[in-house]
Length: 78
Length: 246
Image (cartoon, rainbow over all chains, first blue to last red; front, side):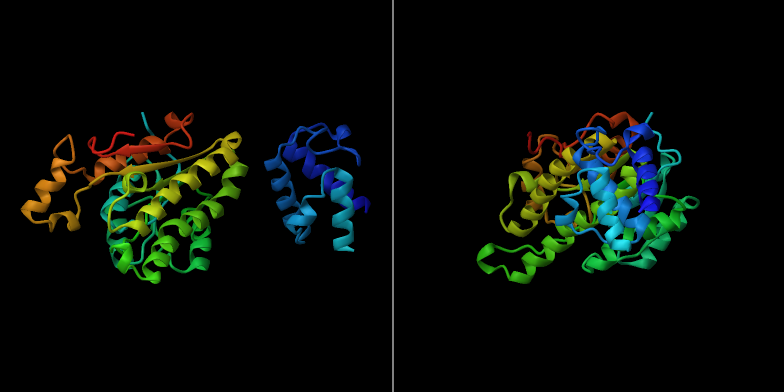
């Protein structure tokens, strides 16, 4: 979990060009981190690549916060 | 002005008159070009003519998987991701709708419209990462005006225009522009075969009184591919000697 969190944080910081301390578990990609809908799609695709998993569209819709992403990815990668 | 120095471009339908002219023009402006088409030997002779900075990536656009893979192959052959896509390949299967076969419709939509969707989609990820890109669809005046005997072709070309406008809005914030060029009547082996009466009738519809050339289209492509066109997106640039003013 902590490894996933660290990797997700790093990716979000890089992709959205935000400060690391803003990227908390509760941080909402759009409301808190300034992402637009295209950023969300790009992030989901980047997660798929980084963790070698598939994130179906209906699941991707529910990944709104950093915590959502970490939870989903952790369950997938076991 | 209009330098494409260091840019990488994929041109489909590069064996045709328009595609060849566009590839030559982009190459002359400094671009590295991947030439795609179905006839490998024609591609090879064009690549040989261009010399450095030209590679060939033959593909059959009726094969969806091959189309999906084409931008990646072109990028590999050029040694870096694509900056410019010129979706130029197209076919016609003309006939009045009363007599048109389902295959005539399906084939035209598949090659002209579906392959544009597949190529653009495959180009997007690297362009999004690069925060820049040029997607240019070669459509046709008949996609806007219609033309009897070409319901399938006109639908596919109108489809390209609508697709480009929607995609242009999706990716505008990423520095990627999506535009179409709509040629009118362009001089080609096909128009060379018109008899005098047909030729006169065609020219009578064109205020400039002449057919266009491949270079006329290539210049438009060069502009839209250039940095100078960075504020132009979702547009259709009509190059037709005035035969339709839209």
